[in-house]
Image 1: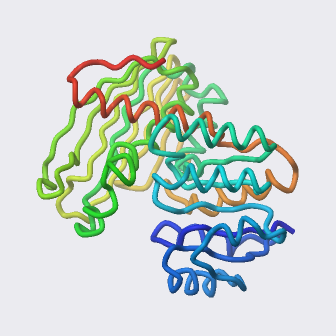
Image 2 (image 1 turned 135 degrees about the vertical axis):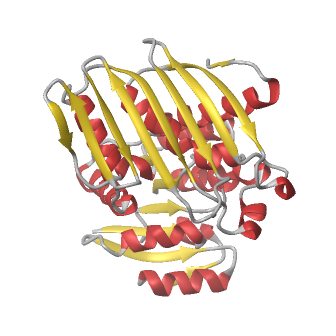
Length: 328
């Protein structure tokens, strides 16, 4: 039996709670949130017996094996480091942090204390991304050489956006949304990114003083290129979309949300891979539990998430300077 506690009871934490409630060999001990009433409500929803406004209450408990951190991004490092120092295994909602220094702090604390660390890059756990990875691994398209990933939608809640996706709290729009895509690019292409160039627009969010449309080009050491379009400027704001084209030396893979379908096209013709969407949170948390129960490495490491963050920070720097940013 894995005994868990959740830290944070905001919007994304609800998706985590839904996923935790579907796990069979898990006991929820408690929930912490800076707003006590939110912690109490979330604990009742999760079936946990304890609610608190101080996460140290949960970290100090010998009844807790692991914590799921769903707080504002700029708080991840302090909470995760404290969790590691108290011997708790850690799942952190993406991004790992808002700075490379904080990411390094988390990774070091987990390593020093022999803690399993997993970052909640949920897009790795959707059906479309897993099918794409399997097609690449099985050699269906040969070696990936070009990826075009276009995704986004509109800001569905302007007040939430203005307060929530502020650079000081989350690292900004590229970080809080872009780490999904940079992580997938790295996972699919399977090589080291070496440079990022990004341009941005403020199309619908002038009052927020933040960009809402980005297009960036990522170059990899093996010569592969990824072009990423990330939008929060869609009208109507409920118009969510995703379109992916991945070219390889022996074929291509495409997927999109228009007809919720995914196809591989190679010398054997078209192959339908299946529906596009699955509740990635459930699969992600199931794999985290499996890692704890069987003492195996987590599928999304701290280093994976740090690299995805570094690429997004490079994209922000490129927007500011108008230049290509080379990764270390």
